[in-house]
Image (cartoon, one colour):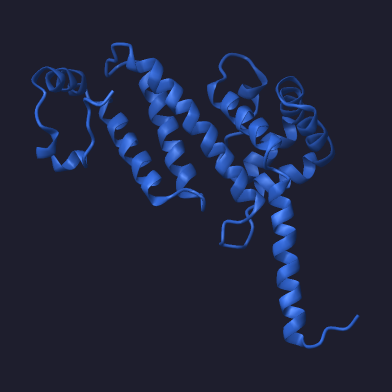
Length: 221
């Protein structure tokens, strides 16, 4: 079948490309989303001598990330078999190399509508949930500036900043909130933080007088 015109052919090619990209995105939604966010969360929270320590699945450098997923295939597939449903098990069994390509090769398009960007968003989601869990655990404890958990939290927050800055799906307000949270965590490194926080909670000044807090209510539970 011949196209009516060059213009019509170009429109058809554009539509075909858009449709193919949409289908590729659908592959990672639903069951695969829950499976992958769980995997990334495990990668962030793991400690000890697990396979997650041997392969840096969270590496920012794409070539090193590719190497991690290629060398750590058994680690990934074992997690999928133990924690994901049959749909995800079948999908990654058949499409693992394509998945590795999607997660480690940055496309030329800038609209963010690509499997690579979607997979990065999954990592952001997992990291955000892990940070929330860490903060909730620390909230009920007395946190000192030399607490060994502080550097870990600070690194996770910086990773979150990098993650959301590279995502087309995260709103600017959310990016601002992440940046603000990271700045607060950075303050914990200062020795005066614990004493300052204690004084604030004791004196309870009106935070509306402090523009640098940007409306943050430290008394809000």
